[in-house]
Length: 324
Image (cartoon, rainbow, N blue to C red):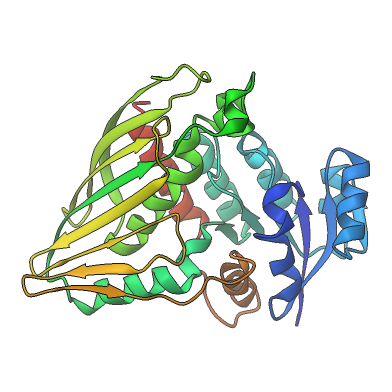
């Protein structure tokens, strides 16, 4: 096989620019079919993105013999259903995050794909972007010495869409599993899993302070990795500012970086000086570099760092920090 032919289940906003075109532009990849329950919207997406086939039934897309692999971009509450159906058909799965609305679901998805012998990937695309690869290289170089602790601060003002009655799906726990922490805070924790090794214990507290919607809008917690690196975080989604900073501190220095700003410089501090390290511009389709690693993995030409197993670990940590 020289080309992986993809089908997308759930061609909503995330697929318009972030991910969808990446399946068309990655080397050895083609987007051949899309599905959305609303047939008119599926047809419109296919027309605008030059996709040959559209469906309003996920099973029909899964059963399409011209589709080799499935990208699942629906709301998290349906990720498990579609992952199991795709895996049952023997087709590799690349799934948006969080993988499930509980760690029990995520673990079941990983286990089922493993039993079926089907590759399973999670869509934490920052693992393949230049900025975060540079941070990984810095940490692996030992420039910080022995890593002591990490602290995450993430602040966002209340989104206008969430001020409306019912809010968005992101703050509807039945669809997403919780509040915005699961949507954006997950990226911070996934990077730490990659940088520092798996988190093996975690605890946290949540509250709904603003009462704008039913899900939690603030979370604080602490954790420890298997390498005994300590961690803490505050994730506040009801404040006046939109900014975030993760600091990783070691015996010889520390680095600070934004998780959500893909191009903000990295700050390196030592006892002697403070240095701003510029990073390369993010690609137009931010998921494309990770999609390329998935395609390369499926073609036997490389490996992907964002797997079902790593995504499931992040789901577990988030659940513990939610106090569940």
